[in-house]
Length: 376
Ligand code: PMP
Image 1 (cartoon, helix red, strand yellow):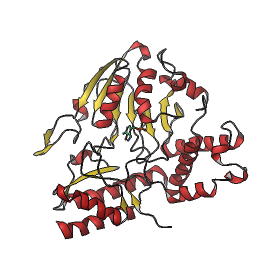
Image 2: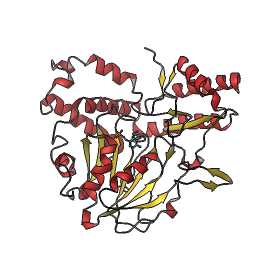
Image 3: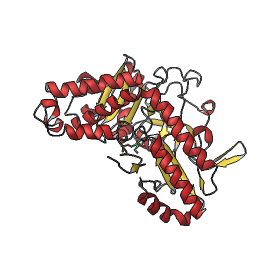
Image 4: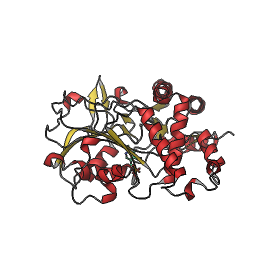
């Protein structure tokens, strides 16, 4: 079966093998006589699906034993509240620090501000000049050395990949070097989870909505170091208290069973591809090919500082914006879907998640070249 290439930012392309397996199992999951959607979340079939999903995810990311893996609901947006509700009261701190790198980090900050004393550790909300080039707001990242973290903050939050802006923090900061060795780092990895290894010695918590690199919308992958659990504020809803979710193996209430099942199929597909190491290498190759083409073209440009360009989401502009509509119509007709940029940024955006093969990126580059030859 051949399908168009889908560059959507999320929900986004899934491996065809996964969709085909799900289709084959839709009405009768492995001889059970029911679809996954129809089975009890406490029954033996679903327990196997859930347990395998967690075990595979632990293998993929080498998750240490002192971390809980929780399958939650509400998306990354709910975690913007759930994180402070669970962590800000730890040791009575009542305060947390945030790195502002773009739209999503800013949203996390705004939500957290409802729950305590929230400060900005570093921000890229105004432009800068680096290497003789000017970069606009949210198009660069402050160096770790410039971050100001309060040593008694309950945590430091960052967004590891800004899906809209196209900016990625590829290296997690060393909190000791920031003068805050006891401050756990909390990372929103919604749009780059499973595309690179995670150094769990440098994070206290990671969360990610599944709908980009890991599966369908509806489940949030949450990794929490065990010592950070059990400090929820009294107002924290019971279903969002990490202690309750962990204590019930993510079944404190009915979990999003079908989303977890599909994510589990994606995890098995990832293992067959060579795991996160293979995705890391592929992400490098795919994004490098596209950035190299954009940087050398006369028609297109990417405006992000090279050191922090996202490997997952590549925003780009046509220097002649009057061509935008024809570009989008022609690219769609050529079987390249969802290239329109987010409205906050404009222009175009190509998302290169794990399920997008190099062939899809090559098809995009071929189209860009052909379009440039005709309109450049
Ligand atoms: N953080 C990032 C980095 C995202 O890309 C998104 C969604 N695009 C969110 C948070 C919000 O996720 P959700 O819609 O699952 O709440």
